[in-house]
Every structure is written in structure tokens, then in C-alpha cells.
Image (tube, rainbow, N blue to C red; front, side, top):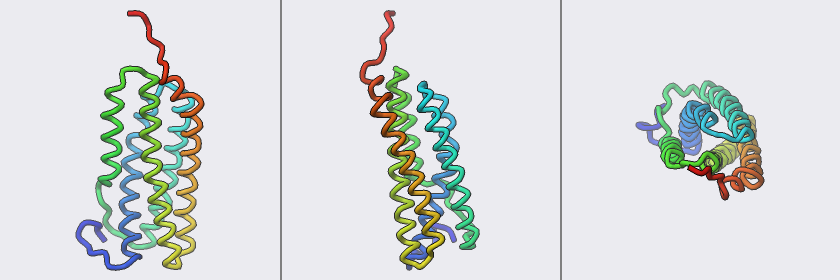
Length: 174
């Protein structure tokens, strides 16, 4: 099944199409997270990004099992939504001249991606439940929970460290 040239005429096909797009999104995110971690100056942010990378790897493995079980042969090469998030993050981060502001930018951008993925996995779980695919629904619900855990960590880090430092960056006399 290709997501580009196959008509979607039922909920099961929509679920498969959405999950194929998520598989692509996870691959794209997996490629950029290490670079974003290296851009971060906050050790705590680096740790959270690495933890997120671990979740991305796990979620991609779970999706791959679903794809294999569903006998899906072709996947989209690029999730355009994830591509837009990545391009936007890189553009904004490139404009940040202060490292603390860049950390806030990276954290906020990763959280935007995270919210997109919470929605995608929650929807997939709901579709799978409706289709009577309880085991599959549990896999997607677990992915949604993992995303929410990362979201909570990012929110705490933003509130108690990153945003505070970005508010008043240290300016060295020059």
C-alpha cells in the first residue's frame, strides 16, 4: 500500500496510512535529534533529548511490527508535517545568537513536535480500538503515554531552568 496513490475508503486503511506517515516521521526525527542534542548547551536538555531519541527508536520498532503484521509494502519517504517542523526548528535555531535562547528554542520546537505525535498516536489508538484491534491500540496508547512523559519533562525543564535562563542571558562585555 502506498499512501500516495491508494484511495482510503475505510477506517482500517486510514489507520494504516496514518501509521505509515508516523513511521516516516520517526525516521526523520531520529536523524535530527542527535544534532539538536549537540546544539543544546543545557546538560539537562541534552539528557531529555537523548531520552526522547530512545523513545523514538522504540516507537519506530513498534510501528515496524504493525507494518509487518499488516503486510504494508511501501512507505512514504517523507512525512511533510515532520519535515515542516524540522525545517522550522532549524531555521529558528539558526537565528538564535545566544546559547540559552537557542536552548529555549530547541525545547519549544521539540515540544511542538511532541504535541503533534501525542495527537497522532492517540488518534491511531482510537482508530485501532474502534476496529477491535485491542493489542494494536495498546501499542499506540503506550506511544502516546511515552510522548506525554517527554512532554512533562520538557515542560518542567522549560519552567524551572531553560526559559528562566533565556529570559536573562548573560551578556559578556565585548
